[in-house]
Image 1 (cartoon, one colour):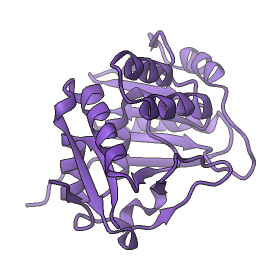
Image 2 (cartoon, each protein chain N blue to C red):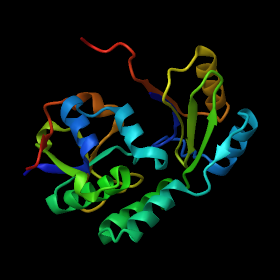
Image 3 (cartoon, chains in turn blue, orange):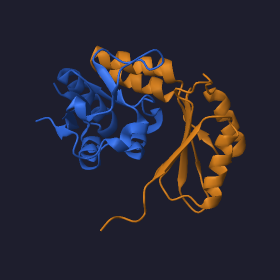
Image 4 (cartoon, each protein chain N blue to C red):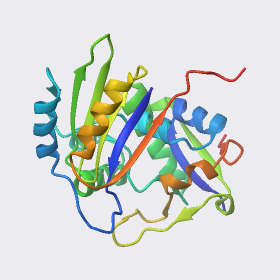
Length: 111
Length: 132
């Protein structure tokens, strides 16, 4: 089963082209800042679609400009939530220090 | 484009920042500093709620606000053009810049962050040399 990440289309294209990048992650998050635990993925496509719509509305002003990406969890250095690193149900994350290990070929766009 | 961050997330010491205190220190260190009027994490959660986003999205944003906030944002101009944006949260203090920094300004920002105490110093900057 793949894991999913929903975001705005500009961020999605950056991830497809370059993989995970801490500068792009910081910049896209704006003045609220990114989730410090890392880059989140969900087991649920529906949850990812909801996040794609919110991030697109928040960052681009148009909820329809969201995209969902998918990846094989075996290709990602994923961590589970634990005390001090809370997560939603079905959520796992890639720590920022592991971003260089997630290159451009890992994620694909969900049609 | 780049950033410099002092990060205490997952720090074994358990130390955190007081964002209000960090902003007060920034105000003293950088002239003409403007502070954005509200907690940026709260603002995001409020906007999501106002936009009738799904309940789980709003709940996660509220939880981020409680866990990582408040997030106070500020900005100031630098000589020669350009602007630096700052953000102070419970676990990190970050400066963002859209133009390449002079060595003098890079040192000023590092000195400010080092003056806040221990933490991991992180930085990244867009290369000016593009691959051909």
